[in-house]
Every structure is written in structure tokens, then in C-alpha cells.
Image 1: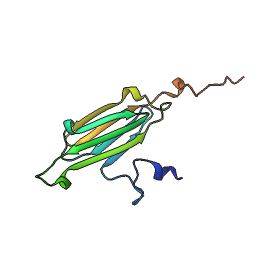
Image 2 (image 1 turned 90 degrees about the vertical axis):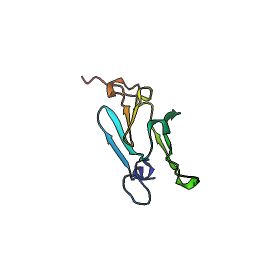
Image 3 (image 1 turned 120 degrees about the vertical axis):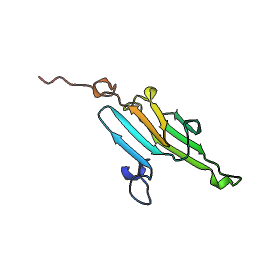
Image 4 (image 1 turned 180 degrees about the vertical axis):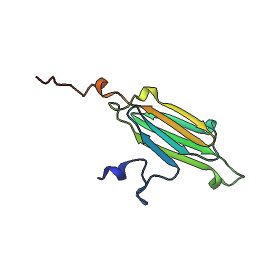
Length: 118
């Protein structure tokens, strides 16, 4: 299957980045920015479940109508060999969740073996 359609950042129906998402990968980290208007940090949960980053948010209920509740759920696979999943940081500010997932440096990866060239 096409990697682009499997990516959690892309919408299969529109073929572009999910609305409200910004994902930037640098040499040092994967940086996510997710718009979650109407939610505060007490409404958002970020967890790691078997190398899958799970982002949940719920809040903003207006009145008795259950459908007016804002809900967000996303799951992002993070290969343990590529990311330092024990060092994930998240910050919620002004309705935007920013998540930073540090990367494992190539020379520190267990599956990379440097061969000496003679």
C-alpha cells in the first residue's frame, strides 16, 4: 500500500495533510502541531501504547447535546529504532497541541553497523 495513504498525517479522501495538522521532521526530531480549538491541557491525553503515539482530546460540550462535544483521536506508529519514545514531550497552548518526538541518532541505532573501508 502507498506509504502516503498509510501515514496518519494524510487524509485518504483529500490526498493532503489532515486538516489542523502540521508535521515537520528534522534530523533531531519529529515535530507535530495539532489544532484542537476549544480544548485545554486538561482535555488532552497523550500516551504511548506499544510504540504507537495516541492523542486524544475531548471537551467543549455546549449544552445538553452530546453531539456538540469536540473529540479528537489519532494514532501514529513510532518505530522504536528510529525514535526516542521515552523522551516525548507535549505542550498544549492556545488550542494547539505541540508534540516533539526526539529521534535516535544514526550512530546510536542498534541496527546500524558501520563497516570499515580499507
